[in-house]
Image (cartoon, rainbow, N blue to C red; front, side, top):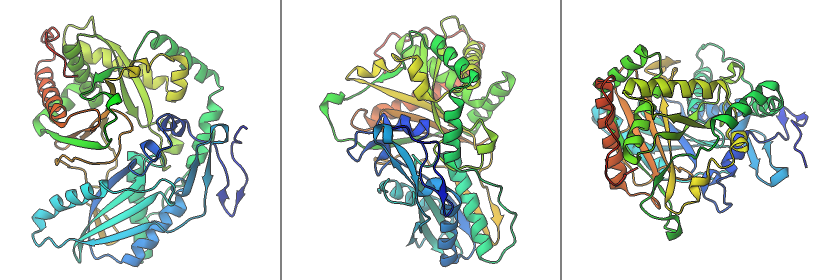
Length: 466
């Protein structure tokens, strides 16, 4: 049975729409056992300090307004082969849990807010329990609180979380009697899924397929040796090793990226590829990243799971300096983004790409850098000041799920430091090794950025850590 593009709406609610390609990609990791990308641990969280007296009834109503505005938050994803579909349900009230957190000294409250965020990440939020948005409010005082928003990752991404808090702040201000600018018109996620499927048969999509077929010929996604084989069947959870890239190094990364007409992501990815080359001796490296998937401006206001898995293949065998590696990495990124294609379709052109995962002792490490252009920083909406809480430095034994392997994430603030995290499956990887990898990468990044034109070292003659 072929899922129709969309069925007629009833009372403003579309009954049925196809899955997005990203939702189909996530389904590849779905074992139907309550774990993985459709399990209760695969959610995304974000937090803000709220300064100002809060009306809890108005806040609950504003959360409901957000669910009403964004259909994906009340959408059931049915995974049943040819019958797979999104089913949009009527609006319902998100849960708002209020926790009193008496912290007398205001200087200690950011740290307590970080602990609150970590506590929330150990909990579970069922994918089948609509709406796919919940909130926890930690109250330090009558006019000071931390708000944590929780959304399932199959329904939202990092970009979406910024949209959600903006829309929540606007709705709350309106409900408390304040005049605020009208929100921009929003297109629904189901419109995006229809658009991307219509795009598949276009000449542009055919050219993109040809690019990936040629680019990935003979390629294998880079995998890292695990500490424990999959066959050991150890209990799975996801932990987070967090670390800091200091302000001086962040500044120098930004400076070098500007001088090479590259993004900070390209510079940091180039350093990671050099890290892998030295550790493994391999120069033809295909490293996966997660793009925003939001090339179409019409969907910039849309909440949904847009991110796309992008395999970035670079051969650094002819690179003699770090400047060469950045230049080669930049070329790879520009070509990949200009031939954007959902990863499921990329796999159709390179079916052997994931063959390296067949080994019992190998895992994928994805690599991403965030540089949010519109995060709320001490922004007043109505009579409440919202400040984004992104600086997290405390490692955790348990956090939200990475479906398989590990994920490097760097949250880059152009005005200061970069916060890094390495999320990893504990059934495969040991914490001491993850901490060592992070330290070694940061030390190498420092050396490469300091001397981009120095000759590159030969690969290390030692047992690889990566």
